[in-house]
Image 1 (cartoon, rainbow over the protein chains, first blue to last red):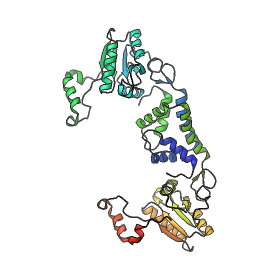
Image 2 (cartoon, each protein chain N blue to C red):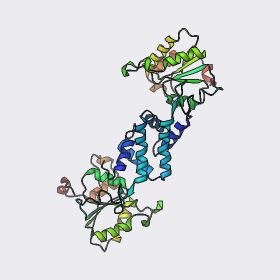
Image 3 (tube, chains in turn purple, green):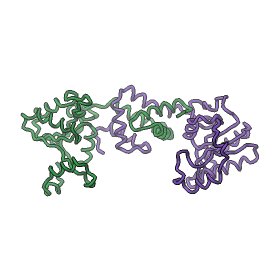
Image 4 (cartoon, rainbow over the protein chains, first blue to last red):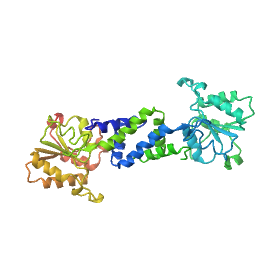
Length: 208
Length: 208
């Protein structure tokens, strides 16, 4: 792509560094912003800069936060004895958006994946076991990716916590709502049969 | 989507205002930038702000430019008697990227479209006819969208220039390279037959 303006070229190149954004899409986005008022472009530009400069990670659960302690950890109306263990902050947003969970979180910052060079020490596992011991957590709910790495992580943490009287659960796996049975992969279908549940549990969707 | 940080929410909302970017994609882009160093986010953020604040439109051809006169208009090695008329600056970039055209441009800023409320007065048509008269332009090449609005614009400008000794041409229409004949629409196929060209012209791709 040949540009007649280096200012335009720089902006397009910066946008094209974003994941999933090619040069043509970057150009479309930049030209869209160029049509806006200077004030609107300032608001756009400052929103990301302010986020990057002022963001904190909650000292307690490692979720993204405006303050040292995030909104969720500082909300005393949430169930303090229940911790949902997730991989990253995107998962927190996804679970919060269901409005079905009313406990606390713990963001690991990844899952154990030796092939990618990620071992337990790079994750927030020690701070989790410390929390469980100090806060006398009643239940730990694992909401990790349904793959070998996720299962390894659950197994590793469960073993570390075997001397603590904490109930350890994982979110249910199975056929997704709206999913067609015939297109489900064999492993999911096999597991959903072996992990079958009583219909009375299935019907009730009580908020946790 | 429920966020635990208002800084994150603002940034995601700003990105989601961009065309073709939904909330989930916006979140992915923002979290990507959040992982970068502050300096890199500053470069990203400043690139668009600097562009918006400092950009000019060439006083001659209305192309986007860092200066009052764009690189193309101020390049005396380009053929000064040939003007390619395009709808917007994206088209200039597209034609420049082919590296096949060595004349000047004129950006209309749109095409005549009464349904969208765009008449000849909103476009840079008067400045074009003035240029043709003053610069004694030899050839005007229309590179507009192949639709009714594009054809109307060509017809309107051609009529305004009927007293000038300028050769008026349009880029060729037809079946695209790599396009399958059987999937071409009837109008394109019919036109490509009636506008058929001698094979010797077709084979040579001489730079203009």
